[in-house]
Image (cartoon, rainbow, N blue to C red; front, side, top):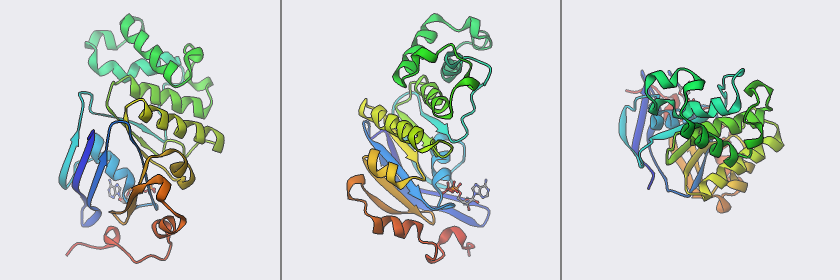
Length: 242
Ligand SMILES: Nc1ncnc2c1ncn2[C@@H]1O[C@H](COP(=O)(O)OP(=O)(O)OP(=O)(O)O)[C@@H](O)[C@H]1O
């Protein structure tokens, strides 16, 4: 198992946001995480990648590179080329002096970054400043940058929320392809139809708990209605601790 999460809890002050969740993602698997606003999806990913400190629970990430993550807000350096932006994914493994100036990036890193850009279908745009690319292309550059970290686990937090339907479908399809190549991929999505179309498995969070964990092909409209029901009972995310 590339990602194994057990009993993950997160409290912000008196507020319980994650009330003990279990998650598994295997190599070669694409997991989509669904749930209403505030159900704890981003917090769960942020705990896995180390951006939040869990209040309790166990998180095990397999492989050497830890987890790589892409976000809704893409955070490319607009004036730099797509290739320089992808190289940035591996700068942490370079000596400091070589990491400061793109002219000093090793040739091997550039070759690897080029292979990552090729993997996301953008090798022909390598020299293009990032700000000249479309939103969908920019998100694919961000995914290539994450690939350049050589992590076995790729996390994506609402990677397509800012994209038009066609670009969103292409980017989620790309995540599915990367899983088929052998990566473990977990993506928070606000598009259940894309999750059902592309993911292997869907986990649904409801008020900080796992309410659904099933093969994507078996997830029906009733499961989704329960996750997004506006009049559902107030859960732990909205309760004060004793
Ligand atoms: N740093 C923080 N301090 C206090 N509360 C926080 C913090 N981060 C998140 N929360 C709260 O935790 C709850 C879950 O937030 P989270 O962003 O994980 O939900 P989400 O399911 O990703 O929602 P969305 O779909 O809107 O992105 C929300 O009520 C949010 O206000």
